[in-house]
Amino acid sequence: MGRSSKDKRDIYYRLAKEEGWRARSAFKLLQLDHQFNLFSGVNRAVDLCAAPGSWSQALSRKLRGREEEVKIVAVDLQAMAPLPGVTQIQGDITKVSTAKEIIRHFEGQPANLVVCDGAPDVTGLHDVDEYIQAQLLLAALNITTHILTPGGTFVAKIFRGKDVTLLYSQLKIFFSSVTCAKPRSSRNSSIESFVVCQNYSPPEGYIPNMSNPLLDQSYDVDFNQLEGSNRVIVPFLACGDLSAFDSDRTYPLQLDASKEYEYIPPTQPPIRPPYEQACHFRKHNLLSREDAPPISPTHSQEEQEP
Ligand code: SAM
Image 1 (cartoon, rainbow, N blue to C red):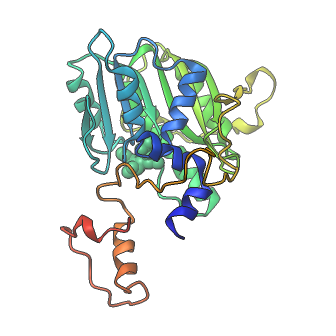
Image 2: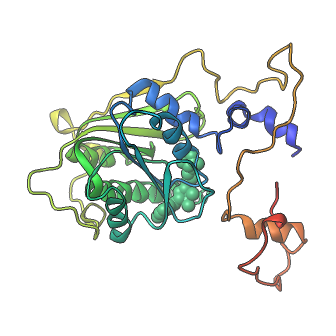
């Protein structure tokens, strides 16, 4: 696929480059903020699963410059290029050491906003993808219970699969308000949505525990079958300005008749993306060879695909 045909395919991908965002997902957080006023009064924010960094960028652009001191921490397994006012932790969100490092950076203070756009590498097997995404969301919830202040907000990507009610039930244990939201920039064809969990209020006596009691629990109850007042109903909200671009539509390359289309390169390619090795093999025609040499760990950036 040529460069311009990729641009034609996705309007938010193009807008991201025009506005200098590292990824199109920035618009998802911005549209969620537009709907829920997420950034109001926030001075300590955590971006879980942050690379390549467009959500951290949005936090940095929106929160900094206020009178009070603002601290933003971004966590990812992968390294990402630096961003103004954002401290990076290259770590795993399932580890208690990561929670401790975040709190250390906040000098013992808890965060008032935790966001997580985490996603495992998609396998294409829907049940497996949904299961892994659910585990990652629960891991994010788990670390959030260590670092979020009572009354704080947690936002996370969720796949609305058949067992989503179980996740809602678990989130409702910790937050008085849970809403499922779909920003305009998230494709309708995608199972992805975002849970916006407000007013963190853990059960009395709850002690955060990284062994993940939520994940390890064996449930006798089928949460999807609960009925009446026992069933957790989470409101669903389509959000973002209705005049915003539709992520499922294809737009012409020349949006503005007065300006000629010009290709803009991506703002910041990922530093060491997981697909790096596959790109290297393809470039050197090694994909189909069983004896393909292992890629060296110092494999240079120039060898990456654009
Ligand atoms: N929100 C990001 C942005 O706007 O640029 C995009 C996030 S990307 C869709 C998902 C990220 O989740 C990947 O960078 C991946 O490394 C990270 N991730 C997955 N599992 C993780 C884990 N256990 N700990 C930390 N990061 C993780």
